[in-house]
Length: 422
Image (cartoon, rainbow, N blue to C red; front, side, top):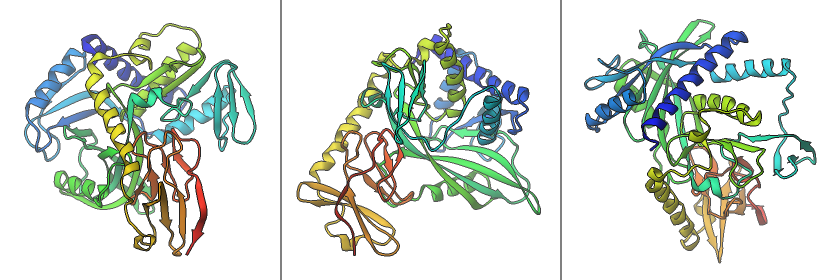
């Protein structure tokens, strides 16, 4: 997607990001469990061995250290070993950054919802009436809430899932693992202290799908557990589960820099493409230099305004997918009567020309909202696994009562008359 020079620049930036996290953790005394380790890429069962050959050559071209290796887990054939990788606890790291930044004079405000950014006057306006003046504004909200259309055509929202699985007996070596499946799976190991000692866990992730477009009853968490037990025979019960939202850019790299079409002092970081830990650190370094007017060798590579001819096909494919989702306006409802909605479930119903998002709570009350996403007018769908209304176009998500969970939408779903009844 970025040519040989771009690939080398990308590899350098991510390697530098790992070192930056390591340096900050050591300098600030942040106990975030940072440790250097190797990463292993192994072949998915239904994939061709050519995938690893191509990855090996591409990695060497990009200047990455890589070698062929026997797999350290139950896998088929050889795998690729990448030395010099790392893992850490991101929440503990952020907690340390919190303390360090405030020591340097930063002020952090939570529960302060931004509703508008006035780039021309560099004002941030909040929902509770405050206005914050600044010389520069950085929007780091996973997907930009200040950009209505442009950036959302260059990336797509995906749901991703993770489970924490107990390990019976000896744990596997503490390496990083991932495979060539589409979507891919990845594994980390973790230790959790409890009253009886230290518990070993496998952290297993994957089963990604486009937000709002998994319209079946499959359970991603169960599929992850099945995959884990297939590759780790001593994997036990699922103890934890999480989900998250990632933004996949059209060409695999984040968008970090000035917001296209905005004032020169408004910056964004988005499109992390599943590599948020290192892309986040890259953004910290790159945006710092841009705000201070300093040169940075990665600025062009990550420029949000970049035009990449190699990404034309994925760009077209994603936007055709979005366009197809608007046809939901023409379809009948998911059910034809509210009585067919079980407690704790939701469904979209057609009423005349309107689409209504109907949720039946555990006390059997019905809650009715407009099913029209407040971002760009797509019809939301019910996510039974995560109990939310999800937009299949640009990834906005809403709680059962319509409150925003994920942008780019910043307004709740609109209520409809007689919104709560038996």
